[in-house]
Length: 315
Image: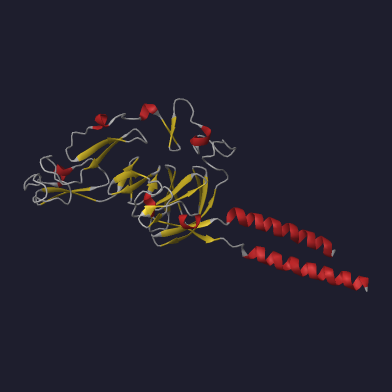
């Protein structure tokens, strides 16, 4: 085969390899109960099972993906490369669009990115999710009264649904004895206030309701969202879970203790800082793969051979 044809072939091969490497080598390690933000999409690892399957949440859409499997969740292609026990997973993420640039790209739909493509009919876009106004259950906190003195009744601004979070503050004369409170810190904690666990239902499926020594105790720190229990630290719909309650992500210069509290996912010196792409997540593969190196070596050898042949012809 003519040496020039071989050279051209390997130049094309090298270019294709580099392009493919730039598309598919976007691998990240994500810890359980952590999130990353890519191209306007919020990608969270909700849980990791003992069978190494991982439950992902992408802008409120959830799917369980097994080790070695690839699925598309809310327009984001996720492939699991490896799973470390139940603590973290290495994933290959491919996104062929940018959500939030106000351009409805061919790969986008209202379901994938209503921020760019708008919702259909009477649905409204809230934090990149289309909400049906007919399915909302409240407009104000007054519409969420569950007649339980041990819950804070809140109408979520995100989903317009009721959130009845357990009261955690020890306060006298509110007829409630929250978990962790005692007779010395809350005069409502009286022996005989409950006789069984059934007397302590706080209407929160994510807490364990127990009657201990005649006092209701509500154990657990997970947050409920759309009927699912989420671990503390997870970020969904621009809110993070902490102590059974969803909190709005903090902006720059607001005090913080954990990175997940910040919209930028960066907490330094007790305050939220501008996002540093190198700190958003641990990018574990950024180098050109071994096939690219092999193609480059072959190309260099072919060029050397071509030069030697030209020199021999000249002399």
